[in-house]
Image (cartoon, rainbow, N blue to C red; front, side, top):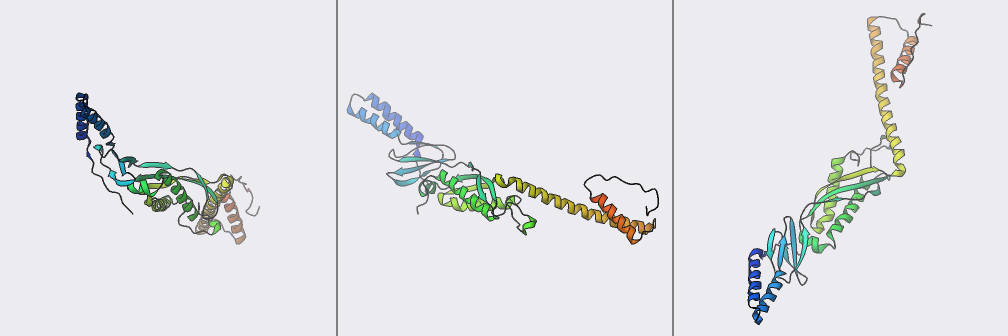
Length: 283
């Protein structure tokens, strides 16, 4: 397969002087045939001027044959018969549409990506694919669909998952995998991927409420676990201090009642109403 090659074009300012000289000389000699020929030659040569802006290029063709690519910016002159195709070398942003796909667990999610890319091989971009800009859009969507099916949206303990990488929490790992996947697909078009990352991620609308409740329930269970763990430590410390300082003698029945009351007070999510016992400990 042919590769990109740089074309050395002639200085455009020098040729501009030549064209102006031919045009002015042709006007001066317009009464004879050579004057008309000089004007005609000047007009034909005007078609050979090429202006290349910074971070831009021109792909040159001669009757369908690839001649080369001009990447140096400035004013140049080439064969007037060349076909000149403009290809930008600037970095471009692509924000994909939100796609509805299934994650590794089969849950429907909405996902989109932000891609930063640029053309590095003008020959591949111009001739190996039909429309390189549309090629970027289609292949990026395909890469996002594949990536979403490789990882779960989140890691839930009740499903027995032990996934180190999830779409929601592992931003760097997922972005790296996405960038590699997109680069493999776009390399045939001579395109370099500068950055690829997830732009939008959420559960699909039909399961969003259910998943939100599930996440809230998981958070509540985790919080309750911490509260109970702390309450047990506080009750244990209270019994040890009472026993150490010999403030009150407690049998097993009274210890059980005290533990029960303390656990209710410490673990309750509402304020408790204390009851003052003015009699003995048994009443």
